[in-house]
Length: 460
Ligand code: FAD
Image (cartoon, rainbow, N blue to C red; front, side):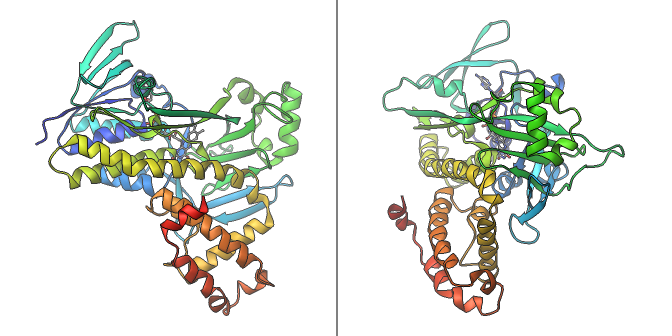
C-alpha cells in the first residue's frame, strides 16, 4: 500500500478525475478547491456549460470505473450539421457509422467525479485558495474566503488549478522556466435555445450544429433537458464584432441576417446576449511541468488550449491515463522518475493538440462551408473505408484514436499533401465513388502507410 500523501490543487474536471484514479491506487488524497462545493452552492463548474467528450476522455473514465455513469448523461453527436445563411442544412459525419462524440454537462460530470472519489476516501476541502507552493519543502499555502491562512504539507503535489494556475505562478520566476500565454482576437458568448412547448428539442439532437460564417461562427450542443447551449465565437473588435454590435437593433439585425433559423428559436436573444458575459480564449504553454521532483502541473494548468477541437478536457483526461500507465509500469513508487517520464512523454503531445486546436478554428468557421473541402472529406472517408488500416482522417486520429497528438499532427499534414495530389486527379469527383477507385488510390495509400514520424522534421 503506497504511503505517500498527495495533495491536488483544483477540483475541476481534471483534478477530480485524478483524485479518483490515484485513490484507487491506494494513495492518501486531499483535494483543495478555491470555490464552494458546487453540489451545495449550485455554482457552475466554470466556462462552457457543456463539453464534447471523445475517445481519449472515455478511456480515462473507463480506467476510473465511472464511464457507465457518464454514459447515462451523455448525448451522442454523430457529425456536424452546417446551417447556411439561407437555413440550408449540410451534414458531415465525424467518423464511421457508430462513431460519435458526446455532449456532457460540465457541472454534472464534475459532480459525478467528486462523488465517486469521495466514496473511496478522497477528502475535498472547499473555499481554500492556493496562494503559493514551495516545491523544496512540499508546503502549500492556502487562504479561505476570510483570508485565514493555512499551510499543508504533502509528499507529492499536483497543480490542476486551470489555465490561470496559482501553482504554476509560484514557479514563474524560476530559472529556465519557459512560459507563454496568447489570447485570440476572438472571444465567445454563450446563448441558449429552449425546448419547444411540448418540452422537446427544437433542432436535430444528435449532431453538433455549426453556423460557419468565415471569420466567426455559432455552434450549438444538445443538453439532456432538451435545451441547446449555443456559443458565438466572434472577434472582439472590427466589423462585425462584439464591439460593433453595440445596440439591441444591431444585435437583432445581425442574428436575423447571419443566423436566421437560430434567431427564430431564440425569442429571448437580447436578454441573453446583453446579460451573458463575453469571455476570452487563451493558449498557455510552459515547461518544465515538474519542480523538485515533487510538484507537477497537469491539465489546463500545464497546457490550456483553444476549444475548437473539443480536446481541452479530453487531453487533460489523457494526461491522467498516461500518468496511471507510467505508475503501473513503475511500481517502486519512485515519483522523481514517474513525474519526469510523464512530463517528457506528454509535452510534445500537448504542443501537438495546441496547434491542432488553433487550426481547427479555421476549419470550423470557414472550410466546412466550402464545397471542395466537403468533397475532400468525402474522398478521405472513402479511402478510409477501403483501407482502414492504412489511412485514417486527421479528425478520426485526434478524436477516435489514442495515437499521440504529435503523431496525429505530423501524419495529418502528410495526408493533407497527398490529398492535394488526389484532388488534382482528373474527374476525381466522380471517380472516387467507382469500384476502380481502390486501385487508382493504392499508390497514395502505400505512400501514406510508409510515412514515418521522422518525416515530421521535414514537415515543420
Ligand atoms: P479547470 O476546469 O479550469 O479547473 C480548475 C479548477 O481549479 C477549478 O475548479 C478552479 O476553481 C480551481 N482553482 C483555480 N485556481 C485555484 C487556486 N488558486 N486554488 C485552488 N483551486 C483553484 N474541452 C473538451 O475536451 N471538449 C470541449 O468541448 C470543450 N469545450 C470548451 C468550450 C469552451 C468555451 C472552453 C473555454 C473550454 C472548453 N474545453 C473543452 C476545455 C475544457 O474546459 C478544459 O480543458 C478543462 O476544463 C480543463 O480542466 P482542468 O481541471 O484542467 O481546469
